[in-house]
Amino acid sequence: MTKVWTAEQQADFGQQLAACRRAVLFFDYDGTLAPIVPDRDNALPYDGVREAFERLLVVKHCRTVLVSGRRVLEIQPLLQSRLPFEAWGSHGCEHLRPSGKLEEVAISEKAKEGLQIAASKVASLLAPHAIERKPSSVAAHVSSINAELIPQYLTDVEELWEPVAEEFGLELLDFHEGVEMRVPGINKSRAIYSVLEEEPKDAVTAYIGDDVTDEDAFRALGEQGHTILIGREPRVSAAKWLLPERPDGRHIIDFINAAASSLS
Image 1 (cartoon, one colour):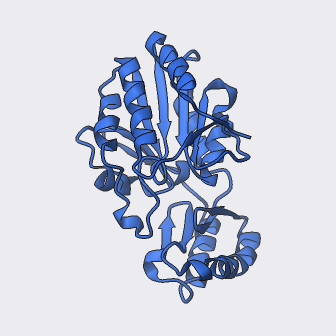
Image 2 (cartoon, one colour; image 1 turned 135 degrees about the horizontal axis):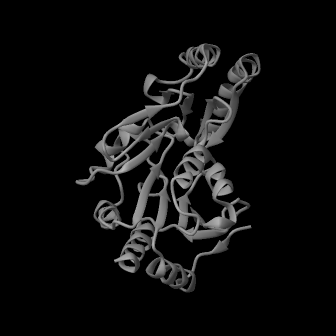
Image 3 (cartoon, rainbow, N blue to C red; image 1 turned 60 degrees about the vertical axis):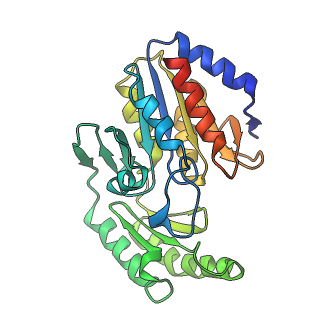
């Protein structure tokens, strides 16, 4: 069970950042830097997040990384950062470096076929904008559907997808108001492991996320760093801490600004 992240924990974290020679901070996007909204194409960050995030980007001894389930090229048009940043998209399948170099994991033709079939299976059930295709997964979003109907839609999607997942060696994962079919082994932990391989062992690290898809990252970072779940109340999670969510986003804005001040 997670423990609430308090001012005391923030102060202790700040002391570690102030004393470190290297820091690595990972952030999820949807539900972390931006609120969860029905129209995912309009998921703009909380007011003040961009400015706070850019404060971290100018700290030379801090590596700031976005890790999202979105296609990596979708993030910048939403975040609108005035500075280049590093991002991992599609749950670790895509890697965009600050230089603009984009790298992508190759997946098998069998997996590609399974994902295509999965997308076609739900085409008559969901609107086109609710079916999100990614290099290593396909997601069915139901957030724009009447709330009373969402459980049935999720059940229908899973019933259509379970045989496909079994035949093509894929896996299903629930997330905030949706279901995703993905290639096993390609998840957010890949981003964590890849980044940390390039960093000193004594780097101060943290991962901040809000969803089931962030659990892989929490487990990957483990006791080595600060694993922080954003939410309204403690729940069972691989994260150690719970950062209480506020509707105006002050929870994450204050966290980032405090970290940036400690690193400066």
